[in-house]
Amino acid sequence: MLSRRARQSLVSLAFGAVLAAHLTWFTPLTLYLGNSDEFTVDFFTMLPYLAGFFAFISIPAALIALLLPPRAYRAYVALLAVLGLLIWFQGNFLVWDYGALDGRQIDWTHQVWRGWVDMSVWLVGLGLALRLQSLRRQLLLTAAIAVFALQIVTNGVLGVRDSSLLLRNDEVVPPDEALSQIHDFSRNKNVLHLILDGFQADIFEEIVGEDQGGQRIATALDGFVFYRNNLSAFPYTHMSLPALISGEIYRNHEPIKTFRQNTFGEKSILRTAQAAGYELDIAAMGELASWYRLGGYTNSFDVPNNLHVDPRQAEVDESARLLDLSLLRTLPHFVKRYVYNDQRWLIQPMVSHSRTNQLVFFSHRFFLRRWQDSMTATRDVPVYKMMHLMLSHNPMVANENCEFAGQVLYAERKNVLNQARCSLVETIRVLEQMKELDVYDDALIVIMGDHGAWTRPKGLKVEAGPDGTPKPMLLSSSQYALSMPLLAIKVPGSTGELRVSDAPTWTADVPDTISAALNFRDSFGRRNILAIAEDEHRERKFHVYDFERGELDSEYLQPIQEYVVNGDVYDLASWRRGELYPPGAKAE
Image (cartoon, rainbow, N blue to C red; front, side, top):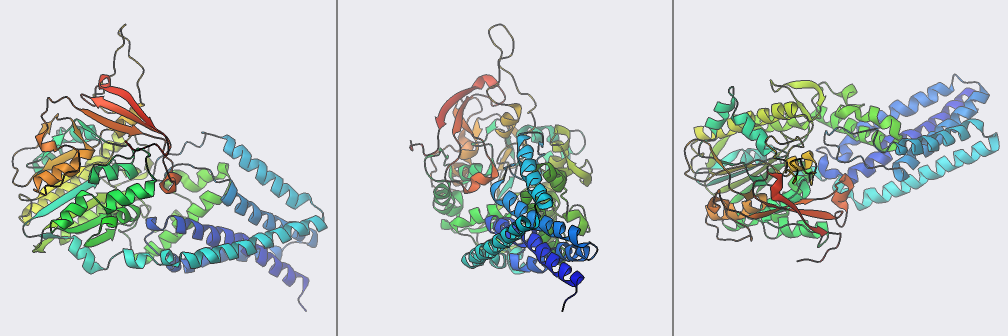
């Protein structure tokens, strides 16, 4: 016969386990299945670490019960049951969208009503646990058990249905042999298509004009032309990429997934290159790499957030990251800010040896440095390398010495400049190594951003009204910044100092430009940048929409507002409002 304290401990352990299961198993599984491409460790590998977190929560719940008198114990068990219900309810019904968790600062004072809604629900729930009589408390316990059972069934069905996703990283992340192929160039024909995500054109121009360091960067870019008057097609990556590899512009005319499959999977410059006999090497973060792979590939590598740490530590870090995301989803609004902790998070620093383990800048820098150290040129077939790196993108974490700044910084111009400069230093080391291997001169190299960096562009000319006062801007300064990504191109055989061109270029022109430079003869319906005169007047279009993370899985985007630019992108008099494309708009 069990003693009273033993029974108390077992019952508390059971309800502590119910609470812990919501935080460490059920919610993490849901998050993983919805975002599996963003993790570099498969869910089954993380399970032992999640089990450790599970024990860390549930076992103390049982030990606390040993110290409580009977009346306090009954309230305590009810409290555990209600906490489990509240976490389940918050994580499934009070799910607020805070945008992409890519290092941007979250304004926790924005839409603060979310916090009051959450607080009201939590206070009512906790009040019920403490104030209800024994019979009604039993109803709470029954409800907690019923929800727990429902979650077991639901997650079991999800796990069976999506079992391939739970182990998908074993197939996606290649072995060292495939990665060594990515480091290997062709002896003769090479294309290096390097996307520095979020690199802004005027930031580049300022860096190469600096007295210290700028000259080295400019010299390393031998044969390049920098197109300062470049316009992006979209302000965000997920629609910029189809434009810059296929020339196609999304106008809400078909479901996003269909459009992505048609552009990445059917007609793109990557498909054209493969048809022309080029082997295609892809390196990008998981989700983006999976898009590039839609059209086929030779070698592919998902660059993880923690490539620069020990593999075993990476497993711990990814498990802690998943738990942090679980806490962010299941805790009330006013507590979430302490979980996010300005991208430093809550759990990850407790288990990581390095404060930089989950910061993508350091991982992608490590990827480039390992490439520099192991670069070879032994392949006999032409090679097209599509590299999409997050060095210059949020979060801003590097100081002027390219070391960790000690915290995540605001995306102010000084911080953006520092990190962009560090990104360029790493990039030119790759170019210098290509020169050492004698594959630089004959290579086609495109270095570009997909969009800008949110920081007000230098030289932005505000349009004046009839009375000489500035007219209201059509867009915010950060939106103009997003429209102005870096574009620099070196065609095979080109030599000489870095040249600056004012030609009115567009990121959607890149496929036609590469096709023309390599004599592929495929047309993507846009312009060959190399043939655009600097004084040409030409209409280009930038498309703005409200973007939240959840829209990656939506059927359509929110209404897309088109802006037409005829002239210099920095001169706001060149901009005018164009068409509006609502969800499900008819194709032109």
